Each structure stands twice: as structure tokens, then as C-alpha cells.
Length: 310
Picture 1 (cartoon, rainbow, N blue to C red):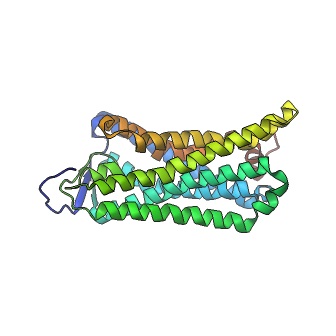
Picture 2 (cartoon, helix red, strand yellow):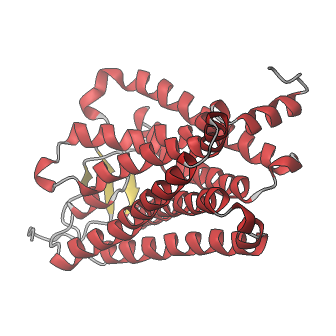
């Protein structure tokens, strides 16, 4: 439990990338380029899925929801970070910080749960193909997508309220946005219940869906290995390769960020991890699905009016 003289802080200051002062312009250019690519890529993915009827399937429906969520996830963090890098806005109000934390966690948890739902979709498609159209009908897809969004923002609301009910005695956020640990470090007193709640939410948002995905892919791979022809195994695995790639990187970054022991916290290391899951990970979705997915590639060529490449 941490104690200090409470002064009723109403505004916070981001320390940002002050340790990299001489590289801030370079970081601004790099992050801006990645941000533009992320927005463009996700918008293209959603647009292609919407206009190409061949992609009107449960898998691509969930992909379009994920791309939309990733787009808003980026909007919550990156614009303010870019402004901070060029010295336009280093401060944020208490209410603004709470709002940023709420939406950041809401979209982050939603993305984790959506990846688990997409894993379930692949499990049904590969392990129970004859029942796929019955199990994954459009009503079920809409209910699943709505449920994960509602769950994500409910858990986010619980976490945000539990943090911003605390009195704050410090105003310097040693980070470039309002994340759970950096904000908790500013509180005059951090009750044990807050640490327990943060752990429980992390288990529900990361460990539970990751475990579900692990079991799903064990069953998927065991089913694929039973396919007689090598070509059939390759073709079947290709339908979930893109998703598996995104899952490994997404959950890997989230696990390192939220399950790393406090004693190992190092500011520069934490910022590097945070840059990975706030700037780079949202870009993975359109990049991986456009580079590794033949159906999306074909749809993109069709939209651009190009001939399909062999």
C-alpha cells in the first residue's frame, strides 16, 4: 500500500518519451506513418468485406468488427501521443484521463474476446463443417459480437471506476497515455482490492480467452492432421493461419504488459512494450490478413480492377 500527502490532483502531466528527447521528431514521423497505415489498412479491410459478397461469411464478419474496434482503439491513444511528441499537449484532466482509460481498456478487452470468438468460428468450421451453417448463423454472429463488446466495456467500466474513486497525490504520469499501472502509481493509497481487481480483469480478458484459444487450436490441429492429403491439410490450415499469427502476437504483448511482476518494471522497457501493443499491433490486423489471406487479396484486386495473379 502506497501513502503520500493527498493534494487533490485534478490534472495530470504525461512524461511521454522524455528519455528520447533527441529522437522525438523521428518518433513522431514513424508513429504518424504507422498510424496512417493502420487507419487506411483497417478501413480498406472493412470496405472490402462490405462490398464483396464472397466475404459475407462469419469469419470475415468478425474480422470487420475487429478492424473497426482496432481503428477506434488507435484513435483513443495515438493522436494525443503524437501531439505530445511535438509539444502540443502534455497535460490531461482527471476526467479526460478516466475517459481515455475507459475507452482504451474497453476496446483492448473487446479485441481479446473477439479473437477468441474468431477462434471458435475456425474450430466449428474445421472440426464440425457439416454443422457450421447452423451453429454460426447470422443471429449467433451478431449476438456473439454484441456480447463481447458489452463484456469488454463492462469490465473496462469496473476497472476505471475502481481507479478513479481513489484520491491522487501525484500528477506526473510516467507514460504516454493513461494506462492502469501508471495511473495507479499516482494514487495516495492503493487498496489491495484494486490489485486483486486488476488481476481478475486481466485473467478474464487475457488468460481465459487465451486458454480457450489454445484448446480450440489443439482440436483444430488434431483434426487437420487427420486429413489424408498433404494439399488438403495445407489448404485447411491456411484458413486459420492469419488468425493464429495475430493471436500469438496480440496475446503475447498483452501478457507481458499486464502479468509482468511489478518489481521488474522499467520505464523504458514498459514504454517499448506499450508502443508494441498500441501502435504496432493494430497495424498487424490489416497487414497479416492482406498478406496471408488469398480471399482478401483476390477481393482487393477485384476492387482495384486488376487481374488476379497466379
